[in-house]
Amino acid sequence: MPDTGRRGHPALAELERGLAQHAADGLARARRVVESPQGSRIRIAERTLLAFASNDYLGLANAPAIVEAVREGAARFGVGAGASHLIVGHAAPHEALEDELAAFVAPCANARAVTFSSGYLANLAILGALATRGDVVFADRLNHASLTDAAVLSRAKLNRYAHGDLPALERALRTVTGRQRFIVTDAVFSMDGDIAPLPELLDIAEREDAWLVLDDAHGFGVTGGGRGTLAHFGLRSERVVYMATLGKAAGVAGAFVAAHPTVIETLVQKARSYIYTTAAPPLLAVALRTALRSIRDDTHRRAHLEELIAAFRSAASDLPWRLLPSSTPIQPLVIGGALEAVAVSDALQVRGILVPAIRPPTVPTGTARLRISLSASHSLADVAELTHALGDVATSLQ
Image 1 (cartoon, rainbow, N blue to C red):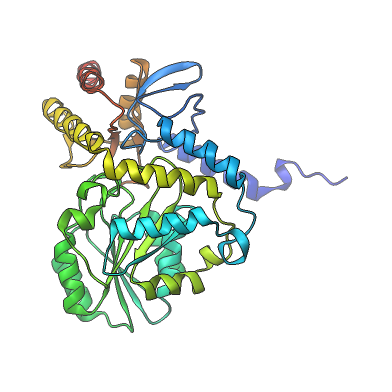
Image 2: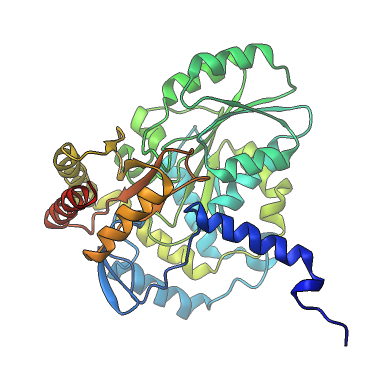
């Protein structure tokens, strides 16, 4: 048998050198094995930690009513969809959920919705089905990676503008020609927590005859009375293609796109990430219909979350690190270097608190940070414990 060891495999050695350098730069990541449901406290390696790391903003991921809905959905529809939506995988709960989501978000009159197994697949579907060679995508530079990948895979020309720089966007729209133009942006930016200037962006889209594609993964369920960032600003338009995920504030899994019926039918007929993917289990749609009712009716969850955000920002104002402006559950504390951010995160974990360090390439070099995620499952006492520990860590690292 021929020698297949390391000396005979220089490509493997090259990968190993790359991983070693990645670790030396403070960029290596490791998966944490969670031994408990999501909540304000989670169990990792047989240790319970106060966690500010999840996107479960409304505390629904382990809500009893939603867990029970999963049981009922499994009993009625089984545990797998069995096929793609366009074969025999589109079950009655999928159809009902899509109708309810479209009516709840209502980005335009008579909107329809279509569900996906993840936000990544949904974003690939939008630009993959609507944009092509000869079109232009104008994208905020801090957009989620899935929007960037979707633009590249669409074969449209990608033009990125500096974060929130509307004059630069307008200049690009007037100078870069294309058959169809798409303004593409996060609605709530996942690492900074700020909200995109949607009224101004929609006005630009109207004046420049462009589509406005919104990724509201971190706004749906939280902003606009739960209806998302469009509702937060009171906006509706047939130019808007609205995407939101269902594994964050909704607490379950998946994503959806809501837009004009013609847009949605185009996705159903042409989006490869929809056509060639087995449908999500119907039991998840059953659970999501229960979650959607909670988002709509349990207003106390959002009220409590707003109280937590205000309390954290007030208490964190004395810390030596820069707290970015954010009115959302995403509270970024910029540390600077990747190794320094990891050191702060590790020091918190020693104190029983889990806050992940976010490093390049997820954020720009020199802006590594703690991404503090608040949830309605937290208490004011939890927030006080976090800010006290941050103060201790700041003193110990000086």
